[in-house]
Structure formats: structure tokens, C-alpha cells
Length: 193
Image (cartoon, rainbow, N blue to C red):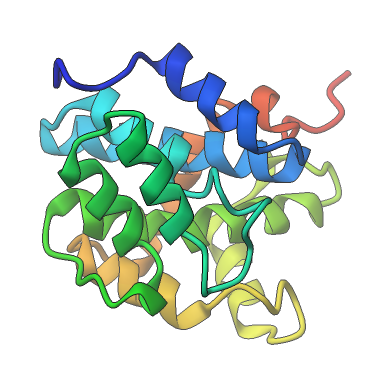
């Protein structure tokens, strides 16, 4: 673990300081879980990758416009002592920043961000409203429906899976599995008897 990094509790405190919307908090947790899973797969630092996932959008509620997000967040992270590589990863997840994705972490954050939001939306329209019952073919069908979750960029989901060197179905299944592990935290476990 990078000794310069705050603990997860400190990261969560920063997230909660700037983010109140339940949906954004759940998104942060989902991207954290997906990045932790990828870190395990690649033999990388789970804490570091997870913290990047947790904080990548922490400034979005206050500054949702492209002029400010994630730039204001990167400034706050710098003030709080987060290392340059961490801030660069946060900046790289948004295409409008012009920060290219070069490291495995940067590519993986980009690959998981839109996909996590899309999977949550897909889970909510299953009969059980549970990510535990969501399957890859259903996700792929929803991707073809342009009216469904229209704010989610399908092109970025496809591009992201290529960036991490995974087939699209494989990447969807991988992230889906990571999110199933925290289904209760995300409110996506559905109604169970």
C-alpha cells in the first residue's frame, strides 16, 4: 500500500463531506468494488485502486459541469495530500479533461465508471430489482435500447472493455460479479424471502 494514501475511512469521510445523494454514494461504492476486483486480477494494490474508484466523482454533486468536474476534485485532492498519480487517474476518467489514459489504473477506472452505472440501471428493471439476478445477455440487450439509461455512453463501455483487454461480455460478467459482492450496500439485493 502506498504510505502516502489516506485510509479508506479517511477517503469515505472526504466522499461524505462532498456527496450527499444516495445514488452518487452507491456509484462511488460500485466503482470502488469493480476497481478492487480488477486490482486483485492484475496483482495490483487493492486499497489504492479502490480508493481511486471511491473518490473519482466525489466533486460531481457540487460541480457536475464539464468546466469543473473533475478538475475541482483534483484540486481538493492535491490540497489533502493525495499523490499526483492518484489525481491524474481521477482526471483521466473524464474524456473532456484531455488527460490520456496510460496506466492500467487509468484504463480500468474508465472501463468501470460507465459500466457500473449501467449495471445498476439494468438491475433496477429486473423483476426482482436485484443485481444477483442480472445476466450478461440482458445487459447486452439493454445496451441496444437507446432510450434506456440514455445518459450512459455505450461507446465508452465498449471502449473500456478493450482498454482492459477483455471481451465485452467477459468484462460485463467480471464487473457484475464484483457488484454482486456488495449488492446489499448498493440496495440491489432485491426483495428476498
